[in-house]
Length: 434
Image (cartoon, rainbow, N blue to C red; front, side, top):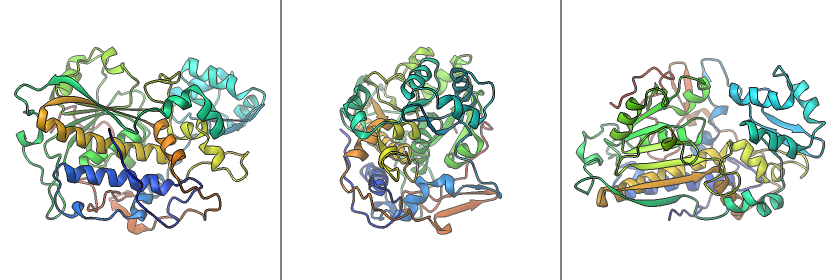
């Protein structure tokens, strides 16, 4: 069972009513400790988590620059809308989610004012149910009490923060011949350091934040991380550049090029996905023996919402966090960063490192699972709420790094000043490990 305590932190970094900085530093420290357990050497072994660096990494979209361009984190149809009986939170950054939302609203164009006018005449729960049926992303804004007493809320509160399950399959000749000791060591460690994931191959099939943060963190510790996306829909450019450091990026349609996808999977030590349960098998892919399979989703694997789509902002709204962070308890607000995404990504990376270390001993495959809703419950349960908190402090330029046109946050993991290399253009690499 994965477990991590909240280290004591002070200051106004990621300041909010809920103890966001505690969640953030706990997740980063979990990775550092897992790396040390796995044999990391050098600065990371005794480095102290820097709250400013953590805050910068968690709020990286506010620091990201592509030349002079600053990203718009949310599309016009993403955000809070007043309904007939409360508030609705939508997420329509991707074209297919936007088009599905327009369909249930009976609109042809992505005009926010027109959408707001329609939503104001309907009940929030009605739109939430309609969205779930067509694969759009919209939830009713709930109070914490409503969420905790609901079936999906109770499911999200069940079990450990990160669930690791041993599988019966083992690599021939365990301890595994697929561990890093069988491959060429990496030379990407900090000065005087040793990277415990040197030679480990990671197939990253994730998008947006939590999964890419996990893959980027594994790359930081020496893993060869290949992110693979379908050609359509294209990833949001700035989002990829903000989380793609240390990874290569390739395009591959799992439905039409199954043999190539299976070849990559057979070569991988770790598979990280943002798919719902059973999706990989539904493609026709076979999980090879000894693979560490890491999965991340919005609502968990159990409960009535297990099959639903979701994002950090959506989970905040459904779980009561938005109303907690609102200024008056009625009008919804938000955390100072997409903290559920980032923290879940780091926690998952820590559990993957532990699973790889265990596999090096017994050769067994393991399943590692995380959900944004479970992380939300962890945050809601954490002590230290501060309704009178000061405004969140903005990290300085010292917490950023610039390569050419790109400015991004420095790694949150202590002991690293930069990633092995900046983000590569989306889909420009071959679908092959190095």
